[in-house]
Length: 114
Length: 114
Image 1: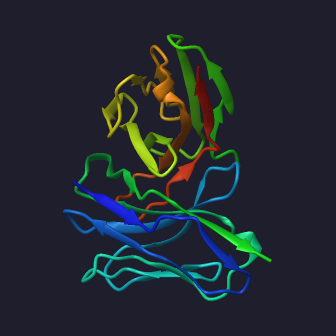
Image 2: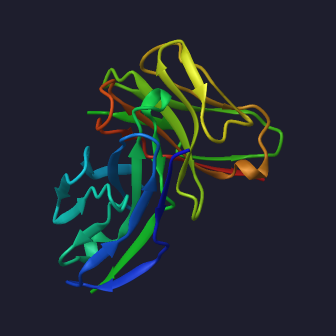
Image 3: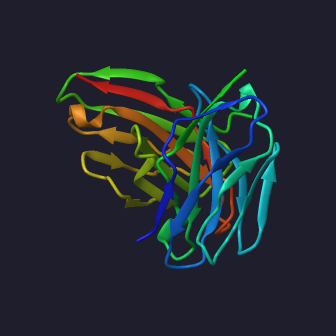
């Protein structure tokens, strides 16, 4: 079956530090890949996505590149802010699965200190 | 712009009680789903629906029932609550286009079973 593995947190950084959150996946088909973000007390929001190999998704200074050869979709940001403190989820959707539902990783909590 | 609306936001149940978590979306999405979020385990799919009258089981369906009588509503029923069902529950909807369609999430229901 499909699965997503992401680095465990919490990740604690100082403001303006570089961020990487690792994500690898296992899928039978050619999935689409997503990063969702969850701010305290809220639901999940789409941060960025990529639909095919070598695609780069980007939003709000965050980037991730769909690497089929390493089955990875690592999230990066060059300079984090306190407002980026949240839980980040890597996810995939596999068109071979009925309903095309999302499969999530375990989530990584990011804490950014001033 | 209501999006996905979940009620209630918080609920405390006694073991053995039943209840229904409500979910409604106003985006005319065909796909709807219920997830539970537990620490370190990400979001796990409980049940999903690909359209009115069609539902199917996800990864962790035991103890839950769903129905989809309209496109807008997708309630989740707990038949006889157990402490293991203490969790945060999220409803999500997405359009019919396969692959990269963004999923929209409600704000969640925090359920405690004592």
